[in-house]
Image (cartoon, rainbow, N blue to C red; front, side, top):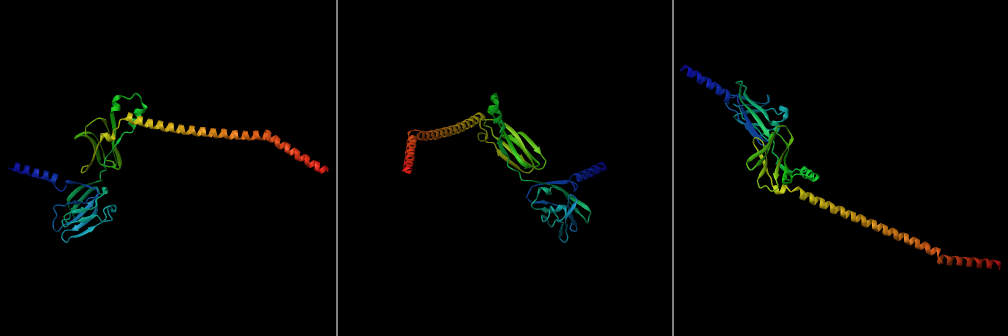
Length: 299
């Protein structure tokens, strides 16, 4: 009987250590939402104190319902966003990622820790962006000996930007193919995938955190086009442009040459007229006029 009683006491003590006030309650919320941290074991004459990272941010007298908020504490990050209800529970409005951390509530009158909360505020998730790996076509165009398998496959990248505490994954149907996780702040993630051009399977890229997810579905016909056809089109278009430019330059050169020939011919023709019979005619007329002038002077 005594052994049974001792066993019961030990079990009660162990359960109190696991589920009692010392246990940390994890709370997650999306940035911009409101969250309520509910206090337990409150008595009518308690004076409740809330702390964020050990810094006093709010207190309430349960008996007279008088609340006080310390807006200048905790670097003013919680200014004008705190509320206390009649039970002493703390409400944080318009949450921000900087609100993440440990919150404790105590009864100052009893000098007792009532609850501990670990709050995680997650930023809104961006929509994953799927793009074609541009290096695939350029590498295949520069190498004439590319394998037939590489020509039949399409290389893709799924990317997200300025994210933290997320996991980025590729799925084939409902089966996970690959994933990458990161907890650092404000980073970009990219995850590659290779599929066949004629493939009919469904693929999706998913970004998620503990409370949210965003999905982008892959459209193979939209994102993947065979490289050789594309390169051929590009080369043909480039050749047409070069041919057109060469033709324009040739026409301009011929026009300049013809104009130069015409100008040279006109100059030579004028010089020939002045040096031929016309020139002799004007010389004789001038000589006759001069002779007549001399005869008049003699008379």
